[in-house]
Amino acid sequence: MGWPNEVGRHILGEIGSTNDYAETVALRPAWVMAHSQSAGRGRRGRHWESPTGNFYASYIMETEGPVGQVALRSFVAALALYDSFCALNVAPERLALKWPNDVLLDGCKVSGILLQSGTQRAGVSHLIVGFGVNLKVAPNPALLEKRALAPISVLAATGFAPDPETFLTHLAQAFAQWENQFHTQGFAALRHAWLARAAHLGKLITARTAQSEQSGIFETIDDQGALLLRTDQGLSKIAAADIYFDGVADAFGY
Image 1 (tube, rainbow, N blue to C red):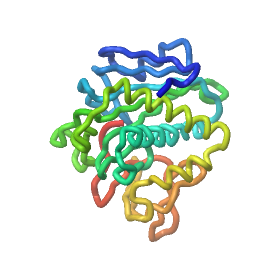
Image 2 (cartoon, rainbow, N blue to C red):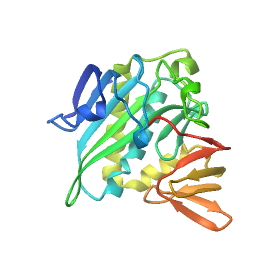
Image 3 (tube, one colour):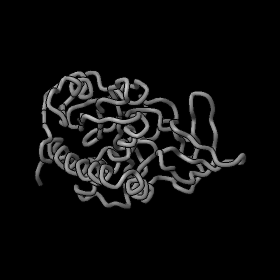
Image 4 (tube, helix red, strand yellow):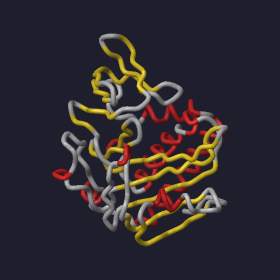
């Protein structure tokens, strides 16, 4: 099990946030992993609990192009996480990918992803992909927002929790492989792979945006990564939303 060529590796003790630290790394691409965080955060600025023993890491890379194209790295990241769990002998049928950027284990949230980009006039200058994984400890459900998707840890689900640095190596390898596929073949190949692992595809879900909430059948994702929802009014394209399964929302974490 090797490390990807020409990719930096920074292992730290406790820091505020791996995403923030990654901004300071001069030689890119690079991974930053911390054994604990004091100011971890998730989507929409939500607090991310960061006890020792779980996994907190960020990957920073130079990139270019429009924001929408760069943001497709969330699918690279999700597929890489999926493969990392499989490398730990977690059975694939126990795993699923939840749109837009979560991994589920036994139907519960085990990890999440946060994208953060730096912009310039022509588009995006660099991208940071943040990862949080419940290796040993899952958040206390009582402390989560109402209707949040149930959390789970790898330890609780399998009886084994890998060392965070071992998990980092698996993830770095898998990310490099999917990023190469994205670079050489485009999003179409990733879209096909992601849909093959998608949670609740073809089932009734609810999507909540800042403006509205609508329910329908999760039909597919399009070639830009947007969710296509079949409703009574027709096909609805949703670029970003909180997703509910049977009335349960994913309202926390990355």
